[in-house]
Image 1 (cartoon, rainbow, N blue to C red):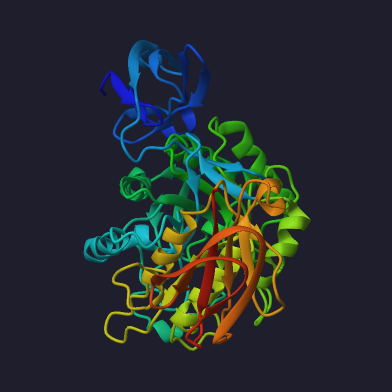
Image 2: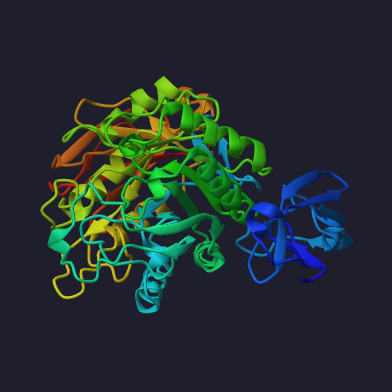
Length: 507
């Protein structure tokens, strides 16, 4: 434990105490951290081998003190530390701004271009390393992944670790074809009062590796794809788990909380259960990280005050991101399409769209003022490693195009885009502020034609001079199309996935 930490970094107090009995339930540790501008109380946790920890994320620079207390004599400690300025790339935790958009706490705008690797944290080291190599290429700035292991198609191997002490049912003599979606929980022998700290350290390693790459860690706390009984725990067991997860992870600045992936398939849980877990989060996470809950068929009521943003899976085969405008108005929160089908070639309808189509959905969502999520599901006959669940190497064509879109989004004035006025066959994105919409602060427009193939487009701009650029969203090029005013025509190549960007030139 050092005596300095950067702003929005993680400061940890480590105490050695009793390891007899069951420290997870029989002992408790609390810490209070005080600075000139804040006082934060957190719950500690047991990390195994007689080690107890309490973690803190300071929001300000300067001198801090801490005091710890608990159920054992060694818990009574005190100390001080210095919080220094944040390092490059450290912009603090994520916040909602301008109603439907995001920014880091230091006010740096954030445009989410996420991906999903559900069981990444539970894979062998070689797959883990391959995943990091892909993430280091800068395709994505958010990743969704699970705390619990996953049982589902292409994902029937046991994880490297389990979250609890005990023994899973032995499936070594069964082929993958034997498994069904309705898993048999009999035969598992877990002690749901004793966590396996090594399992949670694997999650923390992932959080930090993402943080180093400026990627947000969208942690899925519960999910239905289970053969071990973790989705069937009692309320008391769930509460112990939630409290442990919050105590361990909440001090990492890049954490987002997803209460569940496909909450409506967790048949053992009710809406009252989800509201209870949300209340625990609101009570115990002192940093108020972003909170969401993800659906399969039925949307949750995203108007609930604890929900900071809408994490959505499409409900319709053909229209999904096209509803972004409506959902922004309905819920008045950021709309994040975390699942809109994956680029791939598996037999499932949610996992075999083209890279062109996934990229189109990203552009549609973005220009309508929402955000989209990537996934990849290409068959791997030899190893059965699919990015959507395991990570590993990427094979698709969309990641580079998503990175290009993100570069375009980062050039947006202000915080975020919204749908602007345009013809029936185009989607127009403009900065999401009244001034830009009324033209009082200048002008910035992106006209996107999706699967249309116009050979030219006419524009009428009675005021000012406008810089025109042609964006080929698939070839990833931006071409200068000159400065114009009044009525003018922009020639286009007559191919799909083109856009025109207009920027008003200050007089």
